[in-house]
Length: 101
Image (tube, rainbow, N blue to C red; front, top):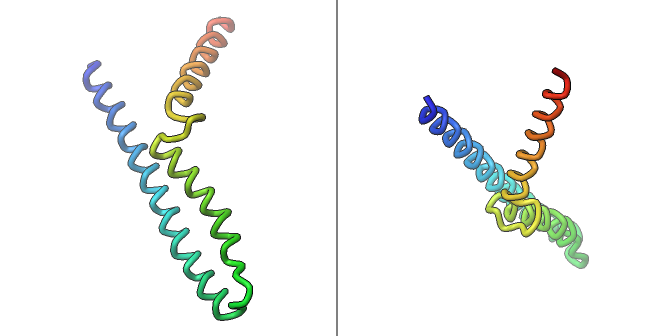
């Protein structure tokens, strides 16, 4: 019984991880496509003023942070922090349930 539970838990963790990675790549593809479009619009409408860099820079920072989070490269708010918070909230919930009995 325990082994089945462990396999199921590992499966759901792996599935969640795959969804996170897919989400990042979707974000990255959208970033590239949209910014290429902005570059074309910029060059066709006002090539003397290159404004497309600003949305590219802002969104690029977001994509970089998203990638660092997905691939666990953030020095803060990473997987270890997440696991610690989950355990903390579970303990707090357990304490709250025992005080109501």
